[in-house]
Length: 263
Image 1 (cartoon, rainbow, N blue to C red):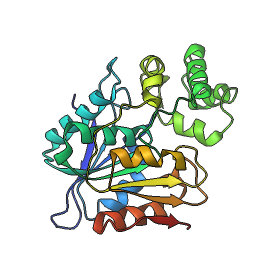
Image 2: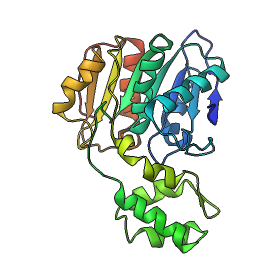
Image 3: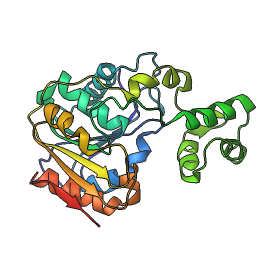
Image 4: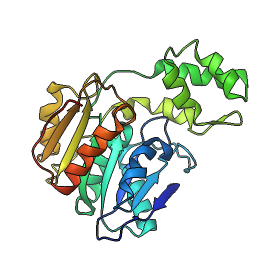
């Protein structure tokens, strides 16, 4: 399906390939806006709402192949024959899944704090509980929703992130479908080896990319590099956007050897 997207042309005339920015679970195209606002200076940039999120169409199918096909359909609609994909969390997995469907249409890949593995752990049950409590209460204001969600979710930053998708008493993500498909969202179907440059940007304090995932990453992405951003959690790009942008720009321009970023 064609996704709801925001496409911006590069501010500087050049031949750089487009960048496609893909948000994570419970998010929307605005989540990677801090990256888009910088990268659009010299790249065409497309931000997308994944299916069952934001203003994109709804579907009961949340398999990785379906999410990947959506990205390709949306690239087609924008006239992008080839692009670099940048995805956070579930968006990173979606980007990785695209390499299995159209390996030659992706130039480079940036996965922000996610690995191509089955996590086998439920990290979002408190979030689902908070969201479902708001729905059950029938409230329409973000103020009332905040008070309700605090019973389940202890981090105000997470609540404020979620409430970006709460509009006039309705959630802009498909809660029942995400709940029903959660095992698949935290799971993974391995993709064939993709021998193009891939950058994994990891939060130094995040549990999402562990040393024991190295073998699985290299098996599927033999040219993978990594940057660990010290002092950050899962929302690496929101916590240290300047550092993440520096890593992305270095990777786009050179793709040189991996290391540890400690800004």
